[in-house]
Length: 576
Image (tube, rainbow, N blue to C red; front, side, top):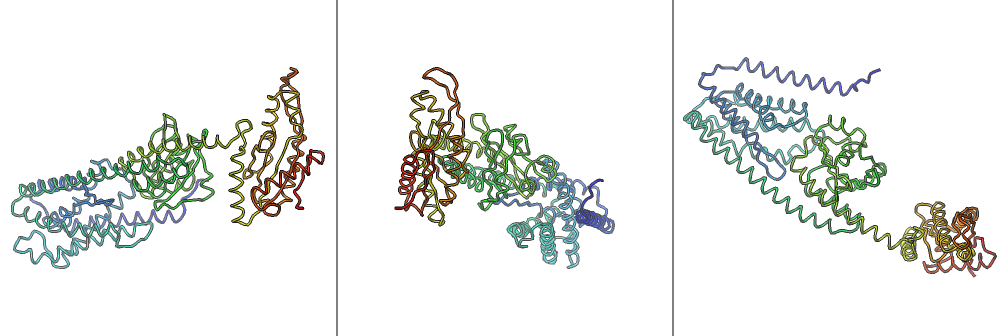
């Protein structure tokens, strides 16, 4: 049985269809009722206005992150000269043509809603103009009488535009938004220019309009050019400064945090996701929103995908930025990605590449369709390039640090790391009011293994025991080689009884474990060995007052309670 659309979605589609049908029908009825034939020589002027509409709409002014179109004075001039019908249809046609010229990709529903909004702006503003006594095709002598209707026309245009935008928002924020204030300022600032343009048309015709509009177009173009150059300059300055801040970090966690901050300062988005490549999978290691809030949801931070899954995976696979700009694209392209990626409407994924190898991927999500520009993609690529170097440096530093803390032979922590970690774990336990147990383990008669079969065999025994200890302990437990054939195991949040059970399990497992070694003394080839261990256990703070006490007491229990009592035993430290 085919899946049916939910009833609510059907109702929304029906409501949208009705809204569109009513709007277009109203425009057609008004056009029939109010159409007045134009002299043939006026069509040339209308074509000039159309060109001006398209050109001005193609070069909006930018103030910060706000884009402002200055087509209102042209709309006003057309309305005052030709009335509602010509202005409404010319606006509809001009906006569609400008989208085709600029090759602007938008969601079809949004294009329709935008055009319908323009219809109602034209109709309601025009009707309001006539209701307050306005008349079109007036002369300079009548300007004082027409000022009030023109102001009403401007005010209604503003209100209709912003009320419809407010109603279409998924989140109903303040009606008087930053965008609305800029819109109001632009309308009333350009209002005199619209009146002047109309009067020049009346008195001087096509030539006068062309001279006036050339100045307007030059101003628009130069201001846009200046704005873009200034914005690009500021972005590059910020980029250099920010890149230096996170490329100087050697701690991976701090590097990722600094990278998130850099992304916030340079790009506009809702959520930023950072993936790191481990093996053949991309692991999600950091999510932050545009306010810098870290998202620590366990279901998201445990997420990973292969390099051929979703938009992020494709970015890593092809080593190229991937950009999608609408709901439909996300549903079609990134179906394998988790719910928190699917909820975005625009997505930009940029690979972090170091020496032609993918280190990870930066993915940006926005609830706004067509949110990311070509310039955003360029900035993101530069950031990703710098981030790849920073992450690689942090990884290299981390590996070198780990090598300093890892015993080369056995692969477990060394004596230095053991002492540092024990201090940290005890401090943490003291703050939380928890217990920490320590197991000290010594392999019995280990010298005999070296003497009988050679040091290579002894080394193999140590490696096998280390593997076994890691297998028998929890992830949060710390296994270390204390020295020679001695091992230690730090067991956080565990009392003496729990530690004794763990120690006994380790002792019996070692006793039963078979180890294959090569006899390098007598040359007998492979032989199977079994070894035993003596184990001492102590717990902080019950049986020790500090880290040093804990080591000393566990060590004493091992030698006195186990080795001196016959070996292959577990002994608990007892206070005198």
